[in-house]
View (cartoon, helix red, strand yellow):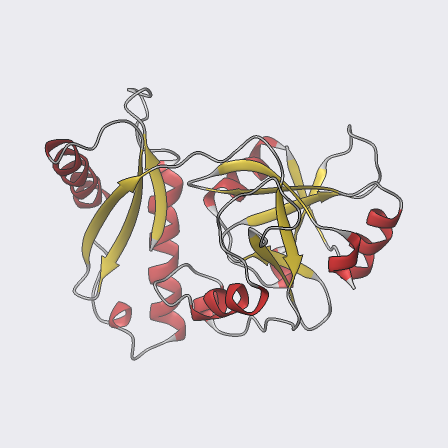
Length: 243
């Protein structure tokens, strides 16, 4: 599964980062076929990219016919027979103000492929939000429930949030490149992450909870989150939420 956007204002590339999304689906199919031999991926091929593009166009035309206008969020799934399915939803833009994150209260273990490739099995992420009261609804008020949860592994290395990749400035120097957790830390590699890495706007590294705490104490911590639907957006975590 992957999620992307459609914008009629981008006639040359109405589906955002589409080639990256298609490659992501192919990589996930190959990984599940390799690691889970009883999975349907081991016995059924992926649809070709042309069929997937046709399904995206069909979904957009259906949305237009039903009265949906403007930008759309699209959930693109590959069903067990190997058939693409695109579902459309209105796209709500992120606000300009930073959204609040909180740290999870337990580590996430990244041994299984469902935490390294995006699928409909999202229970680990959903449960983290339930534990911490995160709503995925932005608010500028620090006393409101948090937007999302910052996850970490058993080595106390930061990995991601429940819906996005993340990157940090720790030095207080706004010219420094943001550091995004390395794939070796365990995380779901998003298409926007790959795009920002290729452009040199972020770099991989290891960021621990202690690193965040020390930077926050110095007032030097800056956070950005990013994914294929919401783009890049600022976030923050209070020092008291890093204890």
